[in-house]
Length: 565
Image (cartoon, rainbow, N blue to C red):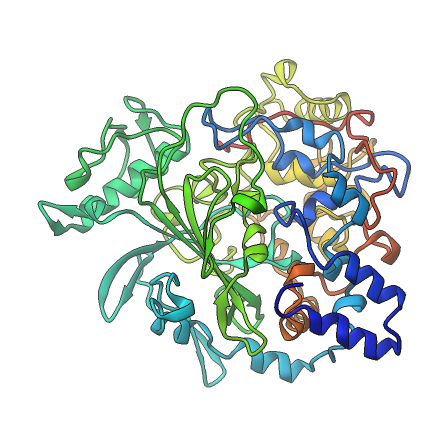
């Protein structure tokens, strides 16, 4: 048993008055998660368990046709058809107890008051970690200064200029924030709110050995088009530096680096701070306090894919040092830091770190192992801190490149989805359904578990008519007049992304309790209440007899690339 977790079992044993309670036996059976790289979302019930048939398929957004021809993305559509969990996981059941049975893991921790949680989330733990970077346990903490401050009852965006460049003591750091369209279902209202920053290697920022802002902007524009699929010789449009023909090499002192479509050049860095939710921050809903700081640095180019992709990461060959590790493909160096029981950022353990690999290890729905930069708001409009359309409405429901009304016959999708798309196209022949429009229709809600009841009215003017499976006569696809999440100009209302204050505080309080007992082994994704099947939610708990997802039988499968227009 690893450090921090004996306290969970010990306290529960005392609370229950016995060392042989059901609670303790459940915890003991799950004290080690053999596959922390399988995220909570993979334990969703499509309806096949609770209702006897699949009524939703959120799995297609990650497990689908690979976006790129490279080995760090895989054709993993088959994972949407069955619950292909390893035998050890099937025997133990869903290991993410904080989501499905939080009373077992954090029930002995008092729920903080509103005042307590406000004080917690408005206390800065980023600055101390940043100032201590490179030392001791924070040896690999990234050199990213804080983006927010809180004083006298107000939040301020700091260290970020009007073009999104991050500065420290007035000097460019190379880091730049950008705004992107959130991946379907991974919205702040479902518990995760974050920023993303990118930095290219120094020579991409220089010309003749000297920092040159124009050169850096040009190279960032080239990279933006490259990861969105524009090839050398093709026209690159809608960038902050205008339209241009894609070069075969980058500019300035990086002129020796070849432009490779769908890949970041080695040395590219990402920083990914994860926050608590704070409605008092009217810019972005983000707290001063960090839940986590995540970091990635590209190590090498991916080879062209051959065969079925890569093998799963195994504990035995997993390199780890003070929170630093490598992605499953070995193409990205990663680092991850999380709160200790006092709220200070510490390196994630080996097991906690492996949590990151499931999503960045090579699912079909990524580009070079990433989810954000290829979803960036185009051009200069996207070079800003992610505000979820609170201060500048420029995220739209862009549609999939592979889906238009002119190519429905060639789509590799199930009959139920095809019929719904045909109904849409019959009413909108010159258009294409939005990415979120399809997701909400496929999922019957706004998260992978259909457990966020608050979001339903934000999605549709009639919350009972979202799913084309449950409401085939009238739904979000065949009657777009039901859509309630778009402004008149096609931009997305921030209300879709952001929770009510009550929900935000509920999520914060549950997470705070996880921090206090250091129970991250049992998961870090929570809503404001349990969402296992036994609690009225749609997350699997036991996995006995669970085999098919039923999405093939219900004809709600889709094999598409997730790249947007």
